[in-house]
Image (cartoon, rainbow, N blue to C red; front, side):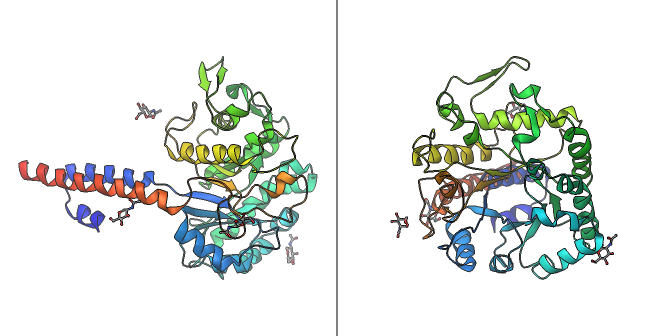
Length: 377
Ligand SMILES: *[C@@H]1O[C@H](CO)[C@@H](O)[C@H](O)[C@H]1NC(C)=O
Ligand SMILES: *[C@@H]1O[C@H](CO)[C@@H](O)[C@H](O)[C@H]1NC(C)=O
Ligand SMILES: *[C@@H]1O[C@H](CO)[C@@H](O)[C@H](O)[C@H]1NC(C)=O
Ligand SMILES: *[C@@H]1O[C@H](CO)[C@@H](O)[C@H](O)[C@H]1NC(C)=O
């Protein structure tokens, strides 16, 4: 209501105030999560969708396939949904008929009531070392985009694919990073060209957890630490997440595509693991995910990308009890299956009400100021 009344008072000072007000509203930015379902004890998707909508600030969800029950459950929630074409289907998607068929089956029945914003072609495909998948990747992305164009969906639905940081040949110091030789020219460069032309983001899955040792735990979870100095740029890094993102940015810059948006497809920290593992406990998970959420929504950016905010998808929504591998793999969740938080993290809606109330108070002051300016002018 306040926004409408502001818009109706059209003049230059009003326009400036409106911009300011909108900026403040945007500061209360949502968070994304990866909704994995490798478990036998999770609540039904309809209950999950209601919970996320009403109780959390989570407003973006990425799923690892195009599960129809989940897509249906998120209808009329406004929550942004990213779906994934599993790796083994990538070669098929290079065929336009099959790409169109995929969209007809997995997207068109659910839009616009389900807010599908992005289709990911596979996940961490370059780290599979599977030649057929890797050579099919960019052609499949291009074909899928053509299929979206033919259905007039290319403006509302973007195509991308997330990468592990294994695509970098070196990443320290951040400014010296580049993509692995071979992949850089043959896969990443044409992919960045495609993403730039289609106004889609480059997606990466940085996990400071997997680069964490006993000597850099504080750096990895955003605690007070001595930091990392980049001798080439003279910039200081106070956390590993920024260092990893700036390494990605530097590698993109080598190929001339540093202006393509970066989205964090996955990042997270487990709350439990084998006793030999470093920093695998609820305190570290709470520090990492909590500080991460505050950091990326602060608008501070990174040393090489000052003042930027990033869309970020935390891994993951639930602890998934049937995931194979070490104990930590089943303990990346923010929530238990009963929807209670595994540890404290600023993701519940109450925290946001405070911020929203502050915004509203500020907005009221602006409206008052606005009338005064109008009165004197
Ligand atoms: C694409 O897939 C369709 C349907 O399976 C098939 O009929 C057609 O031959 C394929 N086209 C190519 C170029 O492989
Ligand atoms: C980032 O924001 C700060 C504070 O508003 C400003 O001084 C600085 O010039 C901005 N930097 C860039 C690169 O936009
Ligand atoms: C939810 O599940 C967790 C893990 O099983 C348990 O520790 C917690 O007490 C449960 N919370 C509620 C409210 O039932
Ligand atoms: C925000 O304001 C509403 C009323 O305007 C109030 O009911 C609510 O308790 C406030 N929330 C917080 C967290 O202060």
